[in-house]
Image 1: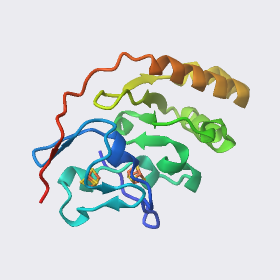
Image 2 (image 1 turned 180 degrees about the vertical axis):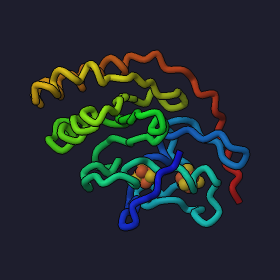
Image 3 (image 1 turned 30 degrees about the vertical axis):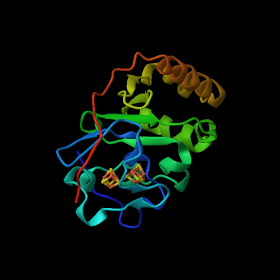
Image 4 (image 1 turned 135 degrees about the vertical axis):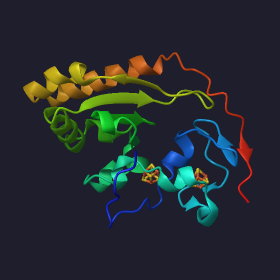
Length: 181
Ligand code: SF4
Ligand code: SF4
């Protein structure tokens, strides 16, 4: 699913989806966690004009939802995946630890989503070449949110991340193939 993008927002130097989302297309296949060989780290796609259709339509929700600049994935370490939005879920794909997870901005935003009835999933990457793991954590976070207890929220979030990092991770079976020409 792709939502309308915010008109005044671009990816800037973020390339996190080109690193952490697996692709298995005839013209381009790259394992999870491998920076696409067509990507210039910190800059963007070197084959932008002829990039695959999947790359043209896939955007994280930071490109579509009014969130602060701190939420930009390369700053926050969090890619908000769009899959699941149509069934009322938001997936926070935490690709690296960051202080942003302990910020008021993060707490208030997640609390607001839960208050609106949105289910929150947490996801973490495995080793390169393995699919991420994911789990719905709405009910786990809810007591901290209902109490407005940010310290407890962060504690619960970090505990959930630790649990997810245990896996098990399934191999994505993707063999790198770079044939965009
Ligand atoms: S993760 Fe989001 S902000 Fe970053 S490059 Fe991808 S679409 Fe752009
Ligand atoms: S082809 Fe371009 S947009 Fe697609 S994953 Fe590679 S660098 Fe990113």
